[in-house]
Image (cartoon, rainbow, N blue to C red):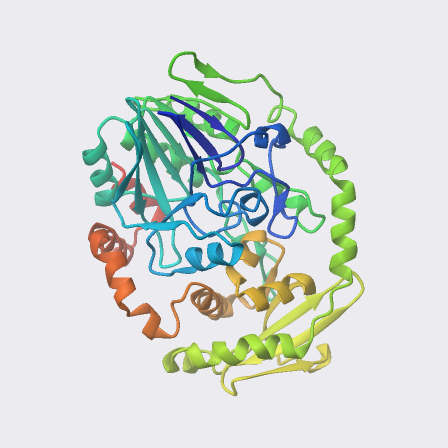
Length: 470
């Protein structure tokens, strides 16, 4: 058998005459030109790529990439996790795929003789999954974004035994760095080593033969976010920190980038490179190479106009879905959307108490209002497609509020994400599908209860994770 790294989080595995493609984002960019594969992907990797099956771990666009998926026949076998929200299945159907199979937590499927995959879900209600691939005597554990720990991770290791290769992310994709406090000059800071330590704790628990930093090989090239490249933790930084701490207890760390591969007969094929030692120069060169695409994007985004009706259409359904106790909690905390182009700013006020949206002038904004600022083009798209959490992942948003109002901003963001992932109205959350999804995942619920208990004891999430991975 052999496998090859295609991109950021995309892996192709070939065994027993069968080809499995995982989380294909191979072409272009995603999140409105914010995220780009780093290093750039050679288009030749797509030549002749005809997978017998595709596995999609979750719906985020750096894993579920529409432009790449559209390159494959619509009758391709698609495997997805059975999540509480059917969002992934719905979006695949919109793309025209019909041969879709949802895998229960811990359920396996035989792709060919001596080639089997098993899906494991572990995440918040928004959804995520990991995949075990067992083929021709080799076991791969693709954890991608799943922060598996505690009993759920022990379940996997007990069922599947020794792991040959483990893949996991090592950098942040969240939007916390997009928050600005209007009453505090303190800039957001984050200890990037927490993500590397999380990678290290996971690998020391799994103890694969080879630990591979994965699912974080990207960069930001759009002018709105180019400065955020400093927040991306590269595989070389992972290696440096782990080496400083004496290395992994039982695994060899291997840095594998797009195009690199391993074969059961020939071993590793890893190209020499300067992608990390000379990263700034490569980023500048990369941005120049895609300058035409970026300029086209800037022009297109500046041509997009957003209207009050765009907000009204979305929030009419949103207000009806939000439970009453959540409305009361935000009745005095309206959310102001600032829709921007390079030459204009339009304001829309969302009032939970009145259940209405209005277009207002900047001078008419309520005092200490919570602000959600984003390009008009992005807002128009997320309102139409119900994709607010994707906007946050793009990092092309700015949240502004007083420090004391940060919990209310968090509530707004949670509700918008809940709408995106079918968690409101509550009838969708407390449903048979939720029960069927979580019943096999009872170990995960124990982890949540343990985290709540330890948080009440004063431990940080980082300290709790370290405990669970011992």
